[in-house]
Length: 343
Image (spheres, rainbow, N blue to C red):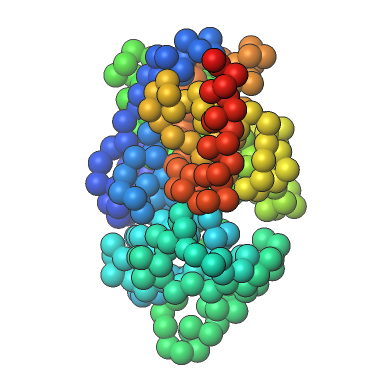
């Protein structure tokens, strides 16, 4: 297919430096009764780990080609995307300003500490909705441009039509890896907070004519008015960029907010149990903000016999939040409780 050739030749940076492995989770699979593999996008340098890096490889190649020298990105103080942008800027010699909701904490921890270490200029705007945060980011862009900077603003979550192609490429990578194991993916489960990961995987699935089901576990609500429609629009937009003649409809967008819990960065049922099951069985860390909600969903869906295997848990990274005292104390308390129950 010509579109696959165009996709393979897409201009992109090499920020990861290696192909993330796909790993069979033998003990975890035995625990939940479903064959589960893990696509290890959590592996990488401390800053350049996680799903956002794939998006940045495509988006920043375009930004640099347009002459950008200063990146602006927005997110929460725990944002994996903001941390990845800061690290990518340092790696490529670009300047970076991050516009972050919430007030500046008394001490920098987790991703926020990394943002500072990578030299990002941090702008805290207090408690703000996603729409208000976007407005603050636009005001920062205007300020920098008026000062003569050549700015490229990255959308929230580094998600766009263009960056979704980074995950269409990622699907191709997984397709090859699983074929080498003699396996064909039945279901992909991943945490979803913007749209680039899901739309890219949906597009990749369509390009390969694969029967896989892509299940996005929503971990941040109220980002868009029409969430499925926004995801679909970017999958379709990515297809147009590479001239792919594939039919994508709303039925291809499989999202659930059933595991969102109280909201973004807030508690949800099964999250602590997911962390406490995956870490001791496989030595893999997931965090309570993003990836653990997807694992909790996977465990629950397996118990309900709602997953067609083999299942691939796409680890989107984000373990850094475990080192934020706000979460680490809660995780440790829950681990102690669960340990007592097991005894």
